[in-house]
Length: 274
Image (cartoon, rainbow, N blue to C red):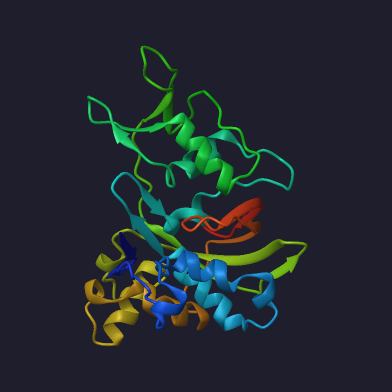
């Protein structure tokens, strides 16, 4: 399994933990630590009260700035908050938003014409973890076409084609709170263009892309060699970028190794164009 972070690639080795006293206690395999497993282990009722705010920020930053590439799916945690549908506690998210969100965490395949497709049952499986209680609708939306089961083929969705472009980086802005197993976390989002490295404008920088270029150049670094994921936390905390939105989410811990958060609400306020 390969784990990617924006700006750099990390290979995660699957580690086999062997007990020191094998004759007494045996041995076994341990799941490799990833940003997802680290987040679930630390943002837990037993640890949350003793976890410093800076550590919470680091855990969520690591989680929301990586994605996992597997044989038949990509887990786009980099887009998790950006595409999370807005919904109040106890309400069903909008299908247009929820459908797009779930695609990033569902196994896919290609049809005879080369279109990316997702089985409806797999989409529902992702929903059961990420949006508990949500029922995936057997219908089209602006992102996918629905194909009902027929001739031995399971019901599935077919991509219509899109390009989101760029990204939004989310920084935890207040300590996470927990009550009866429900967590509340608030983030500020910062939009960065897909080709921000090309904004080499030496006029007073107004956009985040131009600001980042100037910051990189001021440090004697070519923007294309600038480690954005590693450098952004300090740049954001110094107030050098313009935020695009604020988002408050509530969630429970799912117990899933890849998808540790089961969202129970999402409220966002747009501050600028994403």
